[in-house]
Length: 346
Image (cartoon, rainbow, N blue to C red):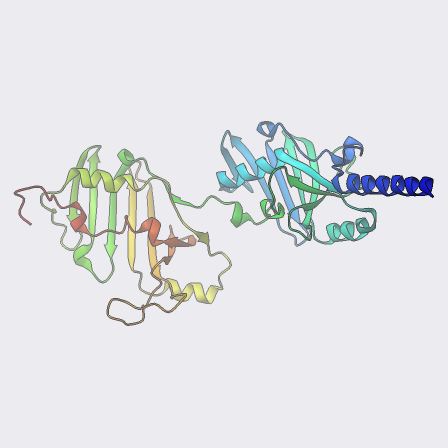
């Protein structure tokens, strides 16, 4: 009887060890060609191609260090590139997909995965498919492809970033708009020749700041083109410093045409025109956005427009959403430039 008990304990112990190893298996016993997802030398990557089963695809190309393009047309978001390359470099196997689940996982990958291709010059160095999240949302199903033969691996894996618990699929976005840089404009202050700001319906607040050369400024009323007296040069410099790296929230490329036309045919709240020393012009027209929630003004009446965001047309071709949090300091009135020093008459 005692021998039988010992034998049973040994069997149970071996079973527990087996289950533990299966749960903790990181794929190290699987051949490298089936599990070699991560690519350490991300600095050498010059092109990234992403495509999904819905027909969306995007090509990201490196122009120079820290400078990438989207589909050869637009500047790419640096933060998006950084996040993607970080994941590409640090991919780690969380576990192998169990034998019983493999068929369903492979079917799901075949019908809804995103494909990524990584290139060094013209050489394809990595290719794999990214699927959905695991039931606990702490891993992402992926399937490697041999970059030379284009043959799919026979084994899907659950991938993760070691030390992190996050779903990785959103990093591999295939939308052109999501990859585009969202900088409305960025000016080095000494390169600004003029800024014209029109308050539609409040002409007395409208102004133009002119700088015929660096550190020489004039401020004019737009209503009658008269000079604004006693300007504070430091205030002008501070104002122009706000024109560096000014971004917007999102593109509105998918807005229905009739709705967009209706907004653009309405009266704008503001119009801003920036001219640099090479006479390159950036024009922005700001339109009121309908409130997303009921809000009351100081008199207790419902607000006509959203107090946080505006519709904005940039150079007549980019229709976007901007935030007052970002643009509010640029949409100041002419009194901002008043010299408030002692003895100055107001």
